[in-house]
Every structure is written in C-alpha cells, then in structure tokens.
Amino acid sequence: MYEERCSYDGGLNLFTAVRNIWAAAQPSAVTVDPVVLARHAVDEMVLRGPEIGVTPKPGGMGLVGMPVYLWTERGPETYGPNEASASAGGITVTATAKVARIVWQMGDGKTITCTTPGTPYKPIYGMKPSPDCGYRYRSSSASNSSGAYHVVATSTWLIDWRASTGQGGQLTEVRQSAVDIRVGELQAVGS
Image (cartoon, rainbow, N blue to C red; front, top):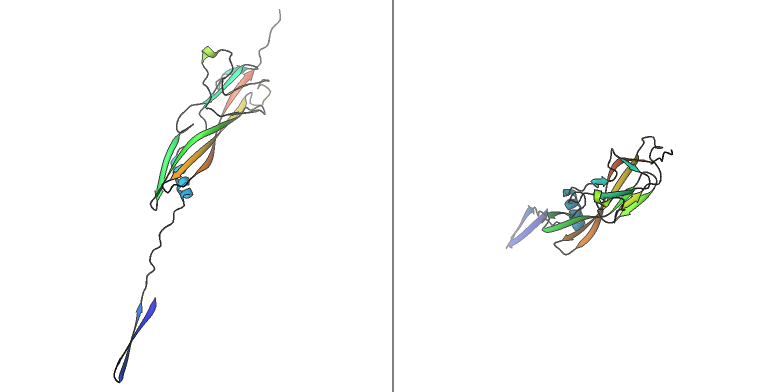
C-alpha cells in the first residue's frame, strides 16, 4: 500500500489530493526442484523386494553341500525396469528404476551378492551349481531353534531420472523379502 499525493496550484488556491493505493504483489514464478519431482515420480512406482525363488523350495528339504539356486522373478515391480513421471511448474521428470544388486543373507552368517536376477532352477540342471547366483550350505539347519535358515534378500534399486530441463541424477531405494528353508544332512547307514 502506498499514498499518492497530487497538488494543484490554480492561482491563489492550493489544492492537494491524497489517495491510498493498494499495490498487490505480483506473483513470482514458482521454482520447482527437479529432485523433488524425481522423488514424486518414485513415489508413483511400486518397487518390491525380490519375489524369491530358491532351491530347496520353502517347505521342502535341501541337503548340505548341494547347490542352492537363488533368483527373483523378473518384472517391473520386482526387478525393473519400472518407469514413472511427475510434472509441476512446466517441468517434467521421468524416473526409471532397475535393481542393481540383490544381497542374500543366507541365515547361516554368510552373505551372497548377485548382480543378476539369478537363474531359476530346472530339474535338468541336476547337481550343477547356479551359473550366476548360488550357494552351498556347509551345515544343517536342524540346530536352529526354528529348524530352518531364515533367508533375507535385499534389493538395491538404482533410479535414474531426467528432467525436461536437461538436469538429471540418480536415487537409491532398498527393499527386502524373506523365506525360511530347511537344510538337512544325508546320513550314510552302514551294514
């Protein structure tokens, strides 16, 4: 608000007019942070922990020393790619998420890191170890209070984003899944 004064001198008569004027502030341009938009795009995605595939199957029984295959089902929500966009203030950000690695905590104190989704086991593989994501237990799970190994798979999602302004970057998300598997020992019986 400001005051405007106008004076007029018409000979002997001095005249002054005063009026108050409201000067509403002009709205400033809204600044949008592309990183915030990237976060909104990620929030639109459904990113899950691995859809665990493992031999032995949960509920089944594996054997000490036998190959254990580890894998996740491949899909946009479990392995990627998963894509979403967000827009505001004339800027659009597109984000693409893919799993970079899965860390498998095997329940016996050992950890395996795989940079592929793994290979699903097929009976024709027999005793061959997994070509890309596998393990071998060295002891039975019978000594655990549950009688099983609690296997936790942690996916690290890398999310590349690009704004319509040319800016870009990378974000990271982590998701987990778990299963319990039993591993026994094959006992030889003498005659």
